[in-house]
Length: 444
Image 1 (tube, rainbow, N blue to C red):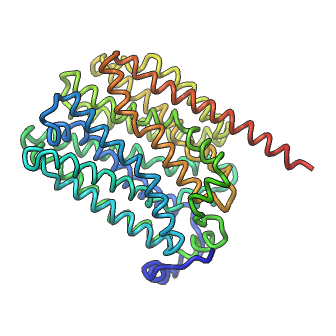
Image 2: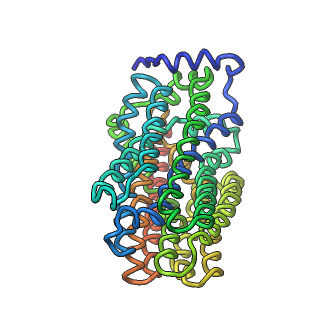
Image 3: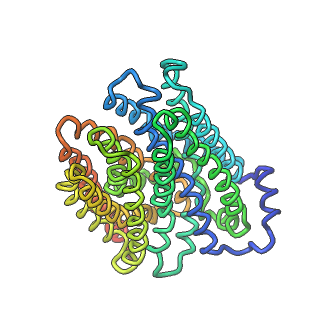
């Protein structure tokens, strides 16, 4: 299919033509980290507000637990909307080019984020506050479906031999970095402002910061996706967007396996980020600011573990590391949640251990199955597997974990985590069987 370019994309190519004839993995890595950090910062700003702000601002007529569950229900809407966004923006990508697609997606994300920053509470407009929040959250989800720029795939394609695991890890660094910045920013406002000022205007500032970061990320990523080296790979069908329906029809098996293979990592992701904050805030007397600092400490360990995962994966293989991590997460699920009732020592132990496991597993989750896609479907297939993995593995994790733990105790929340680990092990096993069968089929 012939690819047309939008005016903005053609102009950007001319602007950055000098000195960018070749694809530089180091430069791509910087662009990937900037882009992913901006996305995850935006994500965590909303996640933290869904615990500390929205139950009181939007659902003040409910008890704190029910208000938080309603807030988590709205939180999940973005994950449901994200695959829809991928379908919409893949069509834009195919007709107008990546520059136009990325600009529109990040503009929509910025509008939705700023809309949340100006959200009036229930006391001002009643139940319409909840509907506006839900609409903005859906807008965020649709826009995230369009922020897939293929830079992670491009980075993997240009990874030196023997460094595949290292380069697969780099895009995932955005998650702990985004959490670190978001948690530190909220901790500052929570600790320095009165409760009234924080709920009135203080919580809104992180959303304005998220908008500003998105603007910076837009220009950084546009600079990458329109370079001649990137365009050459795109036109060589290495990173050409295929239609969603055709991708599912031709590579549906790989999409499904790719969505479920990292389920343990994605389930653990919310079990050590969003859920602990809600539990501590609702069921302990600890100040939220202090626990946000604990999350910052955990994020630092997550960054270190993620970097280590790159070295380990290149030694033992990405799938082997993902399998071992899933087993460790299954063990972790059996005893770790109870640590959240163990005071500051227990909370630190839970967060540090959880983030180490998260760093090791999430660091390689994106590359375990994506390499199984044929070149023609790699770009769109990778986007779809990411969308579905977030939906099934993480979208409902805070809601389910909080319901189970509030009714049956903290230990019950580990069941959700255990189920994710079991599904990961099954998906990896099935993928290996299919890979062996396919390899045997092409033997002369």
